[in-house]
Amino acid sequence: MATISFRWLNAKGVQGENPLDRTLEARPTWWWWLVTGVAFSPVWIGVLQLAPLTSGLWSSLAGREPYLLALEAAGVRATTGLTLSLHPSATLAALWSTIPVIAVFLSALFSSQKTTEKLLALLMIAALMQVALSLFQLVQGPKSTAYFQSIYNQGVIGSFNNRNHLADFIAMLLPVWFYFLVKPQSRRHQGQHRPFKVANSDARIPLWLFFGFGLLVMVLITRSRGGLIASSIVLLLCIVLLLLDAGKSLNTKQKLAIILAFVIFGSLSLAAVELDGLSKRLESTQLKTDAEIRNAYAIATLEAARTFWPWGSGLGSFEAVFPRFQPAQTPGYINHAHNDYAQLLMEAGLGAVLAAAGVLFLVGQQINSLSRAMRLRRGKRMSAEVSMRCYAGLGVLALLLHSWVEFNMRIPALAICGAFLLGTFLKPLPKAAHH
Image (tube, rainbow, N blue to C red; front, side, top):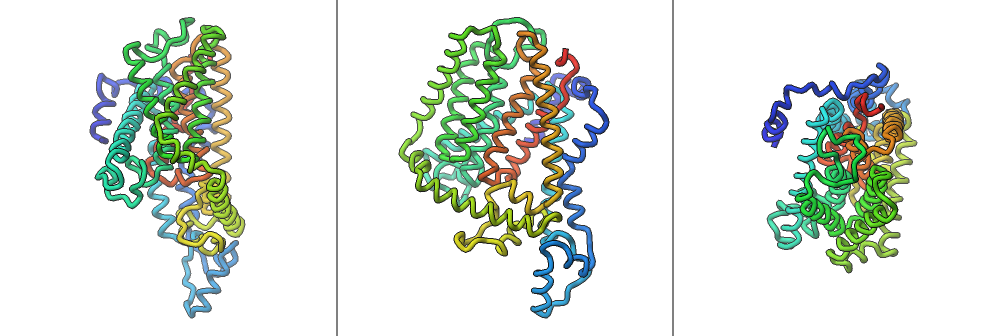
């Protein structure tokens, strides 16, 4: 796949274009330093947590003393060179695992518009493959070879090991589907006062709409409640963005017709799935029970974060450290908090807060830049550059929403996809977009 992607990206002389000529807008030096700090935050947090300490200093840090007392009670002498992380090997593994995520984020940040579009198209091909694989699983049942011997062989999971992760992957790419639906046909069409049109070719519209229909149906078939909520929110925001892009080129009746079309689109998708199974997943009793369990996980994880503040327990250490804080009403083995934010706060401590603050600042600044570019278009359609960043940002939002009740950021495919969309969203606008 890497070889095919490389050859495709280098086709038609793409390697001859400068990927920075349209992206390196006049950004202050501190902006680049901040982006670098955020991108490499797992590295500097991990390196800090792996720094060796004396046993005396180590035991004085928040949350560490009970472990030293347990060693002494067991007759084990504490060694020197203890690290901030309570599970150094897990932290080292976590540090190495973030390298592809960092690389993809930086690649998206510096890639040209044309290259980014090709990579987004690759993601849509991946989504199509997930839909096809899931259909095989649905048709063939639990014994389907399409599960690849996964123990989670009920329902549809695609190539993932959990239906929630499949739903989140599709939810992240719904805005990308919208981008290819409405993007300008060519550079000479960008920013013109032209009637609102969709897709690159009228002949492709039915196929693209059918593909979008398939994506929505697959999210519903997963019966992932978090995925359904995230998909519904980003779908609504995509329609709002589409109508804002259309502006005055559409009258009120035409805008209402678009809204009605997507309502029918969603209704047909809902009608295409087994409603009994979906309704059981959405029953108030089951929702309340599941919410109580996950809420207990999150509260216990936040208690652990408070205990180890500000150093954290160590990246990747949740599985080994959480049993100390596990509530009695949640028996069994728990390897994730089912809340990425609580788990990050527990493992990384103050480092997670600093990284999150940096991301929020960059996101806020980019939203301001995109809003300014949209205000200055004076009734024109959004350029492809502005449109791409807006829809990529909505894709990231889907991941962030679902991560409140899942551990999607811990899944490599989802983390890499989210990093690419975030890099695409934060990419500086070309100067022409501001005029």
